[in-house]
Length: 262
Figure 1 (cartoon, helix red, strand yellow):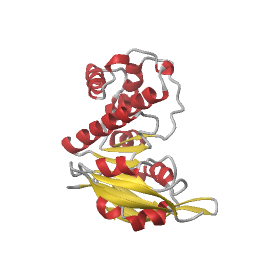
Figure 2 (figure 1 turned 90 degrees about the vertical axis):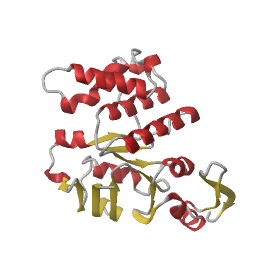
Figure 3 (figure 1 turned 45 degrees about the horizontal axis):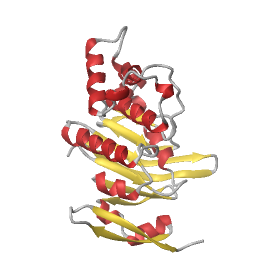
Figure 4 (figure 1 turned 90 degrees about the horizontal axis):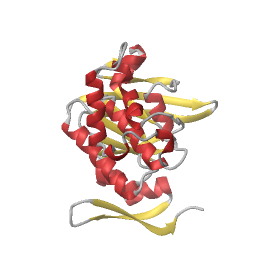
């Protein structure tokens, strides 16, 4: 798999508090990489640094071999789409038009037929047909989350940056969204996804690799079975656990009742 993004020696601080500490990793074509870590580990901050929302103290972020500091905002938006942890926008427009906003990097003067076709295809793909022409500001929190994810898909980037994309979704929609993202990333050339997430089992099921972040540092980066060991989970989350592979070959992480630190 070819390299899409490379991060080297990335550091970021809030004042005197070092939040991201010497982070290095590579994101490759057709893979989903999940970032796991407890609250305050630096997951959201890392995504914001990658998306140019925050400026790192030092380090380099390369996309297709080009430093993102040399890439303009419109070109960056064609390469990366970002879904934040909290949806603060309260668009008073139809769902179709909200998703159409994902096409803004490609629109010069007016919306073209191709843009509308891409939005219609995205709505069908993401199973939003039932409320495509409802007002966004009248949707539930979970429905809004699905629409914002669809907006990111319609943007047609190389890299999806998602911060807790399933946090407001019920179990059925969590699985549907992650399965569709898995399909997009694995079947379309030049796509990859980097996802900050809390749910260990969603991460292990749908990720090719997992980055385990602890106190701003990557302590493990690899296949889910290699990263989500009882030792690593105890170090990061301060609980005991065990790995089980079910009859379908899916890795499950069972968390025990024992808490190792007060």
